[in-house]
Image (cartoon, rainbow, N blue to C red):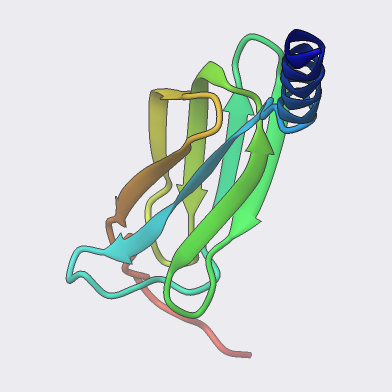
Length: 120
């Protein structure tokens, strides 16, 4: 009798734990300029190289972004851009199952000087 109850409880435990399996990863991070200031509205584009799956996010008012439910593994290529800054490319980024990979990205100001402006 005790053995049957123990087996039933074990079976129930195995069934409950199988419903909670995690099958994805996440990417998050912060985008800053060279001075360490957060960049609001920066575009983040991640591509899972083996499958071509694409994920996008935009940084919030404190310069952070989160891309939930990405494929685990990699490699990923990540492009980060913002108006007035040079695009940054990160390659060979890998994620682990059930874990958020955190990145810190620094964009360099892209200063372009105009020779002259003609108004007519």
